[in-house]
Length: 107
Image (cartoon, rainbow, N blue to C red; front, top):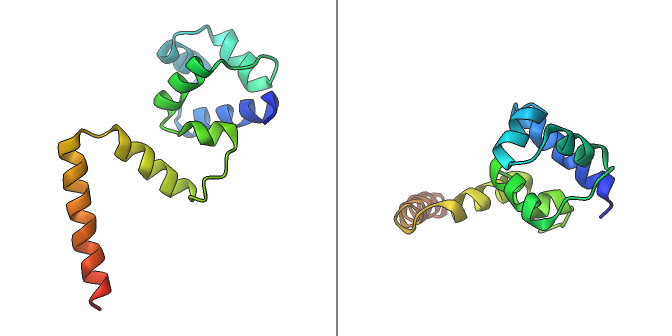
């Protein structure tokens, strides 16, 4: 994927998160001008920084890289959030899903 396309996705995710370039820069630990260069496609993003951006913006790396996982954006976001949960909370979520899944299958 081209640097410019990654920059567009970064800008879109930042806007969706209601963050200014400065706010995002502060959370990721880079300068505001660096975020601007990323978004404009004038500077490539290292994997370590992209990983931090992914965490701050709540988007999986695949979103920025344009990798088709076969998941909808909602499904990818849910999977990303699920992976960040503690094992205890993962078990709770699985139990809730099983209850609703079984209910719908019995109809």
